[in-house]
Each structure stands twice: as structure tokens, then as C-alpha cells.
Image (cartoon, rainbow, N blue to C red; front, side, top):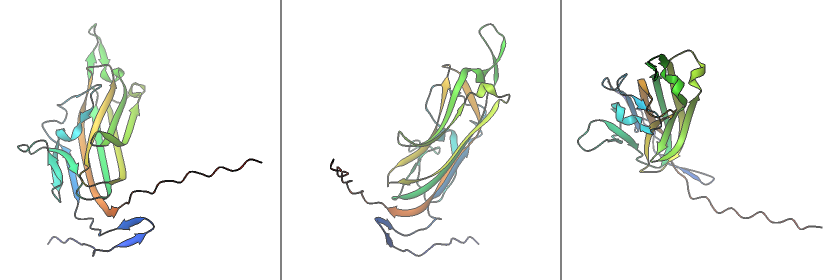
Length: 205
């Protein structure tokens, strides 16, 4: 028997922050890699790539994950249903494959990369990111980027996760596993902060 525990609605005025009802079970989702994209779709260098289009929806408790288009079953963004505090986790595992240079000599593709970014974005605005630099200094061809954050969002905000690799144009990495998940922590309304009064000047002697 499935049991969902909900707290009773409550309101608390604390300073300038108004807390409303809290129900941690009402907003939660998780997306994971699809079998047709894992180790098959390359992430091209110097392209800001939306990773959610490579994922499948594992669950969406409240139905707030938008699709790529009305006829697609693939996810796009998490659409924030209410003002409040939300938590997100994202993970990208990827591999570099051996290749050949212009002379046909073996070369590791990671030599053509300088930095990799995993970004949590609200529309086109980055709200959290992690970066990996200088991969050529390590011996492994397998790497991982992950982020975890808690943020305040407004109703209608659209949250997704993106990847950017910087280096020689045209080079790619191949994801071996991707996940993106989140849940609501708290319904909360933050009022517009009052204007800050200028600091009074101290009279000179």
C-alpha cells in the first residue's frame, strides 16, 4: 500500500518572509539516460547543449516536466508550478575515445579540450555550474561532472541542465550516463526587498 505523508497547511510570518504550506511529496521528478543516446550521441565542442533532450522521464510526480513538443514523449524543462525553494541534482559521466591526428597517428581526443561545464539554467540564465579543466593532465579517459544546489524560483521559471565543452571545434565526447532530478523543498513567497537607504555621509572635522 502506497502511503503519502502530507503536512497540514501552515503560515508563518518571519521577518519579511512568508512561509506557506509544505508538501515535499507533491513536486518531484527524475530524468535519466536513454539507451539510444548513451555512448552514441556525441557532445560537440563549443556548443551549448541542452542535455534534457537526451534523457527519458523516469517519474514526474506532479506533471510539471514539459515535453520537447506536443507530440514528443521526451522531456525538455521542469516548469516551476509555484514560487518557492527547490533542490536539483545533475550528473554527467562521459568518455573520450582514441582517434588519429592529421598524419594518421593515434591521439587521445581529450587533448583537444580545455574545459567542460555542467550548468543548471533558468531559461538562458545560469543559476549554478561546475567546471572541469585540463583533462589532458590525467591518465583516465572517463570523467564525471555533477552539481547539487538549492535555489529560490518563481512560478513559470523553466529549469534544465546544459553542457558546454571548450576546445578545438568539431571534437566530441560521449555521455555514458546522465541524470537530472529535483523536488520542491518549501512553498515560500519573498516580497520585493525595500530600497536601501544611502549611507549618510560623516561630516568632516
